[in-house]
Every structure is written in C-alpha cells, then in structure tokens.
Image (cartoon, rainbow, N blue to C red; front, side):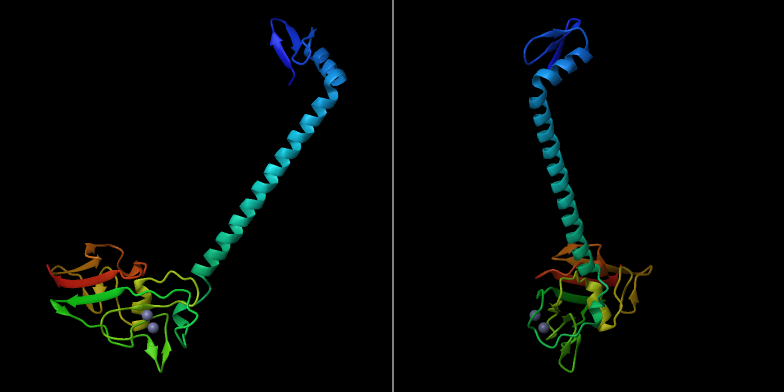
Length: 201
Ligand SMILES: [Zn+2]
Ligand SMILES: [Zn+2]
C-alpha cells in the first residue's frame, strides 16, 4: 500500500499528502496513483498465478513420475513368472554371493538353479559358487526371497530349508560380514556377500 500511518493522520507514501481517513486516502490513491497501483497489482496477481501454475505443474509431474515408478516396482507384474531367453536387454545385471552353512557344513547352491531348458528366471545361478545372477528385464527391487521362491526352498528369520530356530538352534544372517536382520527381505545388491548360518546355540 502507499500509506503510512503517522500520528492520527493517514499519509500518502507517494506524495506525502495527509488525509483524515483511510477512505480519503484510498480515494486519493485511486485518483492520483491509480494506474501505477492497478498495474503493479495486476503484475503481482499474474506472477502469483504463474507461480501457482508452475507449482501445480511440478506437483502433477512428481505424482505422475512416482506413480510410474510405484507401478513399475510394485507392479502388477509377476516377476517370478518372467522368463529370460538370453542375457540381452536386461534392466540390471548384478551378482550378489550367497553362502549357506548348516550345522557347520557348507551347503552349496546348485548350478543352474532358476534355469530350465535354457530358460532363465530373473534370479539364477550358472555354477555352484554361490554367485546369484540377478537380471530383471524391467526395473524391479529383487530381494533374497525371490531367489528362494524360484528355488522352491524355505528361508526366513526362523528357518533355512526345514532347519528351524528352537531352544537349541539359532539362525544368523550376515551381509558383508556383519549381522543383519533383514533375512529374506534383503534387497539384492551387486557384490554383497550374504551368509546364512544355522547352528547350535
Ligand atoms: Zn550374471
Ligand atoms: Zn545369467
């Protein structure tokens, strides 16, 4: 606004004229400085509108993108049913390493787990080194449970195969040498060394 309230009088900021009331000052502003007032107000309104519009546009974009990613990752796609005919055109190709030790004995993961007649599932092995080949054809958060499901074996915080936690046995889960409590929910990452140990307490 163009007025400053000094003592009891209203004063126009533009030309220093004094007025007895706000109404009088408003009349004066309209008459003498009307155009400037209108213009700047119009500009302000427009700037505000443009800001609001850009903000809405960005929000819509963000919602659209997150929707796309949520759809892409949570997906309506049955990732375990996906068959790969080759190693070409995968969205990701990483190699975590899995080791299983049961009652002091190393349990090798069979080669070609997740491969039948040359058709590969999104997590599979090519040899018995424990290297998992994780190759989703679309962006997908593959977890250790996916490998066990494709292998048709049980693994969770309580059991590895049919070896379950009880009063005499415990199940420990390590990632890169450190205890971890994610078990089957562990997100598979490149070069992670995953170790499952079932042992007597
Ligand atoms: Zn591979
Ligand atoms: Zn492969």
